[in-house]
Image (cartoon, rainbow, N blue to C red):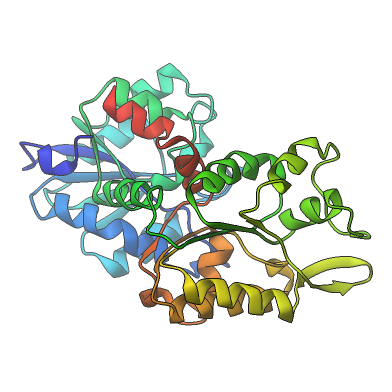
Length: 359
């Protein structure tokens, strides 16, 4: 995989960077700058060498959100940032021509153009027309077959940014863990987790299934789950995983109004003990109904991992939120910017956006 270290010319060259600007915004202000800080090394590498850096990204799911407040927040972290309220077209190209070497232009939300999600060839050509070089640095979206991810690399000379390079290196290392190895997978939908669970059961000594995802396994094993969230009706595939002795399930629960909403103290003790003995810990997804305040198991496990001597690799929005809120981020070995992208990479060892760079 070619990286930005392989680019030969930078001075006054317009370089299009697909970066990670999809951050939480409330009342017009960015409330968490974590992903922006992770994007800075690649941006600085390019600006310090005199490139005209053009940043493209999406924000939100609907395509109606604006990147204007994100550009403002980025401008507090690095000098020379301006925002242009369009994504493609003559006016954008003119703004890029007028950009001084070493400065940064943030373009509007990619998803305002329906051609982005459709991987429309014409939209990809419009994006490619903005620059001479393309850099992919948005690992969290590399599992999407969108125009800015797989379309543009077909047109421009393309390179991986420093964040993408780090993600690939660290997650590849997680696929060959030092034993004893513990994997913890939370969240909700079984369909999105089944492939990674199958992979991890081959490579890790213990694979704990947590969060609402565990409800499916508890029900398939004959336990009563009441009104708890269950995402699968056919238990045959789950029973195949249940037969694996490496699989670990919660042993007690916090129940409210007939619904399992978090893991209980005995499960927390079990996880803490497994973390204490592990040399590698991989974690993706909350262990309870985190968004609605059931955070005890998630926070307890975060503390256990931070206190362990294991090499720890974590990802997923709520997982990172817990770690950040507890002030534990520096005590984890590697924190991925991807949630779904992390799980898919662990399953396949690659992603569409990475393959596009290598084509």
